[in-house]
Length: 396
Image (cartoon, rainbow, N blue to C red):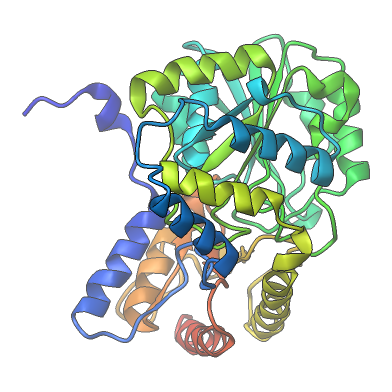
């Protein structure tokens, strides 16, 4: 079978690959703690489920408009205004089958072969593969734990140039939990003003899991509004990973292009999910504050436990539900049988030795790190950290 070069060059999602390996061990009866997948362990709120059941009873079972039901688009506009201070019209909103599709729609709409897309590293695993899939050039703007993984205005200006088509980032960030403040984003905005042809793609899927308060949107800066795409969705903040609905607020030309593309790929998102999404968009954000506070408590727990592990460096994540420790001290170390060469080796060794599934940092553009998701119970977090500490003590 002769597969396309495009698919042969495409890497498998490392998070999904590690989760699959963990599940394979679980099926064999192995007691594995899976911290590789970013999925809230909470239940979807009841009022959202009721809206879905009502939609079924009302026979919302037919094809949906490609960009979404008009009343959902309107609800998303109101949400953007209420939570982010952004003025979008319904024809600037496109709903998709998850924020992942929302992002790749935008990349397909704007990136030509050879166009440069700047990714502040660490970045979410799929960003680079999406850009490469459509022959864009990934430009990694590497950051480190010493700056809380934040790109500075000086570093941003160093990478922006006439070949830059787009800048793609998330705040709060997957994998680091790094969350930019309004003043930090406004400082970056001053740099973007010097490069008016660059499209900014702001992934705000973790907006409601922000321990600092409200998430500031770059599109709220008037000079950047007409070239910023704001991405969001239901999966993280509303514990709706399986429902699959993402959305964008975008300049109309980009929104129209995404509708055109999506019309040839998947058409409109699931009708029942869309009706449930209206309930989510109309909800007062305070309704999901208990979930955010539970994540904050878990964050504090995992940070305190990792501070007890020797030769590991961590930041203090202010959002999302990930810890991204620097573990390069352990590279080249051995337990007497296996030599750990890099983060991928270390994650595989910890899966075998500690029965904890983690995700190596190389696929996030940060090979000296690995990622843990603390979207699980406090008992499992405590057990996993104990296992990791005990296992790492065997490396010398």
